[in-house]
Length: 179
Image 1 (tube, rainbow, N blue to C red):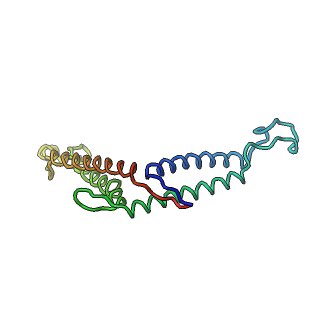
Image 2 (cartoon, rainbow, N blue to C red):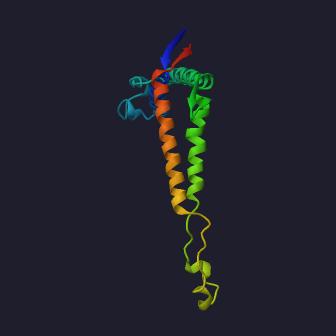
Image 3 (cartoon, rainbow, N blue to C red):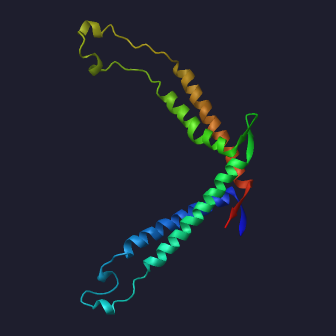
């Protein structure tokens, strides 16, 4: 059986399943081993205690089914991202390439630009020098902070442009989930 959904619908479904998986993991953790007072009273014989609200074996089976379904959804997303292309800045790119550009390449470029900061004359750095020499020390910048800031703004604008493209793709591009 296969079903068609947009990428956005698949992403929502994955998020929903992630919440269900987290809930069921907590239930397994709580009910795989529990105290008698969790389901009855102290002093009641073990044979007369009521059943716990969850059967951990059934929960584990449900968890495994949910994990497999989430894997199918993620596989469909990866497949759609690799197989489908879009045009960005006049270049044909797969959605996967655009995602890598958006989530890895551009943010790392911003981080590199953030490394370029003006040094300050700190006491620790100059403490080994005589006072008259310390007064003659000055900072030399090998970058223009205005250019750096403009480059960072340009990259952030590019990220916003890519987000707009990806939002449009997520809403309109159908993908097939095989079950």
